[in-house]
Image (cartoon, rainbow, N blue to C red; front, top):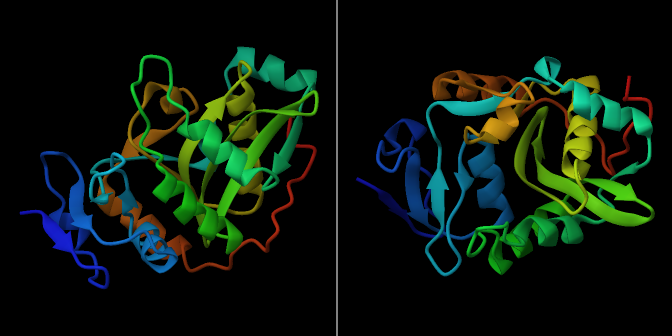
Length: 232
């Protein structure tokens, strides 16, 4: 049975998530900073259509990328070596979210609502949500955003306006996270796109064990600053 949350009610144990739809744990509540941090630290994330109640998910298995397992395809490695771009971090968070919110080709809408943008912008202002951006010719060409707790990064969404721009940002992010000692990147759902980078599914119990070890480690000081020698 699905749990309906009041604004102050805590989440049920993730083992109570439904099998159909797979991973749906609870509904309702608000997207306050405290609730979002609590959710992510326990392996729970919001995903719902604009106008609907907030839906909270904890799928099993969980798609993750261990930074040391990053795979960069030969064609992308060639693009990275061109150095025709600039990587920035946290300089255009609102613009990155807006880019991610634009419907993709063949899609009729987006799950990144104004409510979601406002909630994650608050987390960004707190130093919890971050954007990684690819700039080409002085213009934002693509990027991604997500949540960082301790030494766990939770990827949320990415967008591109120039071929490979979001992939460039992703590779730089993963390599920087590895240097910072991040243990795991949460990719949430299984996609072929992420699998090509080396992401794989693990049991939810293993993912939660990873979180318990990593989310309470010291956070990287903000504002984030990337190294500039990450492309080999």
